[in-house]
Length: 590
Image (cartoon, rainbow, N blue to C red; front, side):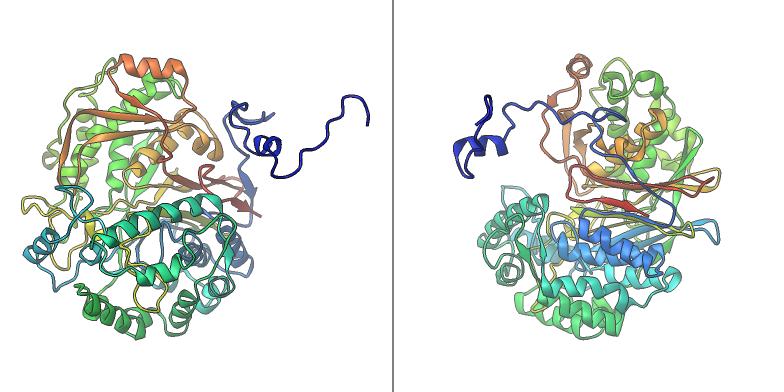
């Protein structure tokens, strides 16, 4: 053996284990010769199409759909269907959907609200009585799982509404890849495996406590051999059959046909309130997107019952400050963003609800004069001890996956879809292979709240697709999944790109902050300043600066959302696609 050579350690030896688990001696990633040091990869560039999702196979399916002649909407539906199988920890056909679609033919942005409504057969008193009988995970806590939290799943109807207007390929062709993977199986990547294990533990506990009325179906569908391991091949033949019925029979197969009847029978069996009549009455709504101007860019969102207006408020408040001068990832910049969040979230808690049932002052909330007044409440030098909702009426004239797609014509789609908390309610209807969402948890039981529960009402919704235009041209489809993190994450992305000049990938790779505290639309308030969670990439100087301004800091906990984006150069038509480095997904373009 040559001098200085070292024998390779046998697999399984202590030395080999240390080599494969080098965290104690590695203090950062490898060095990149281009772009910011914190960037994990370059964006994906292409002219003919692009896609970014939270799972590599879903991104590939979207690209394949585009190459088969499909539109960006066809590709988005194909990817979303795939994610319901491949990433059941965040979405599925038991959940809801929102999307923003840029149509190059009309040069217009379209919005669709595919959220479902509460069962007609359960009154507010019935809901309160049901909740009172449930033993939750902590005294005073309301149920997060079980049939009381189930609302009508809206995703499938939204698919077909989008497809009827902007689709091209037959739905049978769009759904075929997912049906094939559901039958044959697909390996589970590490982040999704981690969350599946966490969901099993939590749902099993809530089932044993009686909060989840029936868990055998979910165990058989997702956890037949216990927690899913990284690389394990996961199959869902029941979902393959369900998607086959939808491919053949259209949306009515889900809302009026065999699937609806199976859902009705299951809910009657376990004593749940959802009925076939609730499914038959469901419809998605095309809505006019709302926007604010930020440094010459128009940032767009879906109006309430979505929380998209909260992102617009945060940006409208920050538009009053010189964020570029404050400095990227500095204590000054982060402080201003946190205070904007606190102000916007107080309005979120007080005003946001289903506008069919409550007067939501949407235009007042994003009025430039109102946002200017809210910004005037921020002290750049220190945290404000108390913040409260404003009075926008005087300015009046309301867990998740996210994906983006774009095609050769310039059509771009931002689509977000969710089962809400984790995998959802814990309930899987007999033989159908999907879990119902628990979105109904987001209702308040306070009769004085605009978000109070009512039969046939849509709950306050956290999921929000985002879109940016410049000079009336499409600039970016983007989003950040993750409950209350979504407006905070979207705001950070826009600030990183527009104020600090980062590309689409670096804007997402940059370290994030998350503030917790204040009031919630479901009811309840946490007084005081709350706490600020910072990812490890923030400097010690920034941490000390924030502490000096009065903030209580906590470390990274992995709950900083999941981002996808596609930018488009209006001059060249080149797409720039980015994906979340904190998840399993990829961005591709061609």
